[in-house]
Length: 165
Image: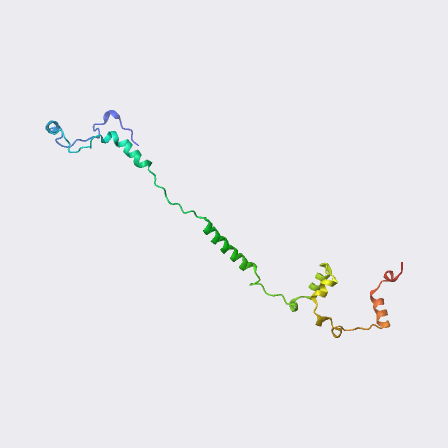
């Protein structure tokens, strides 16, 4: 940026309209004459307007009309919402969507482990059986011969298990 010497500036930057000062005196005189002849501007405020203005404004502002407030959670709406939520909860908790478990789909190992580890007694098992399940022809009888028993003990038993203590 160039450094301009302040003393060398010839133009001040302000401009006045052409012939402003030549007719300035005439315009001022006409304005003074107009003010002397016309005392009333044409606008009139009512009597005691500015004395009572503050009290009028405060009286209008301080009047509060009660507004009607509708609460979001009144007893009726709360009852509707809770009943709908309870109905939806019951719908999902009921066994509508569950498939029934069938005895054919159970593994024998699973049932055996449940009976052995689930503290299930003979009375609980007997209560599950029907009268037709307990008939004698439903049970197969296996007879063991002495040779079969001896072969089983030879193959599976330890000598320590057979010793009397």
